[in-house]
Image (cartoon, rainbow, N blue to C red; front, side, top):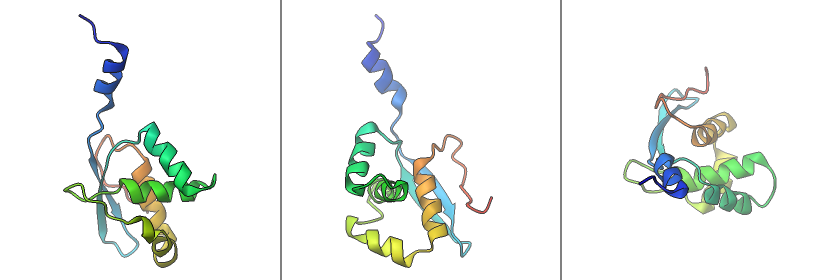
Amino acid sequence: MALRAIDRLKKAANLEATKRVVTLSDDSEFEMWVTPLTMAERERAQKRAGSDDANAFALQLLITKAKDEVGESLFLAGEVDVLKNEVKDKDLQALMLANLTENEEKKAIDPKS
């Protein structure tokens, strides 16, 4: 018996977390685990961003999706201002990009390349 369309889509989704490694401006490596983006997560991040600003959206996604190796959140919702004001833009942009991109090859993402 053939799978229903919805079952095929769910099976193909593979929502397992993958490791992302970003080289920061001080040449240290920052590791995070991220699951692929779902439509519901996109909608929540857009709502939390409160605007159409792409950076605000990407920052909300980073805060909600970046986890450690055991699945604990790396950031708290209240840390938005700290990230925006006390982290180099270059590093924050690299983290947000790594969070948004598919990492099929599971290679480190180096913002300098």
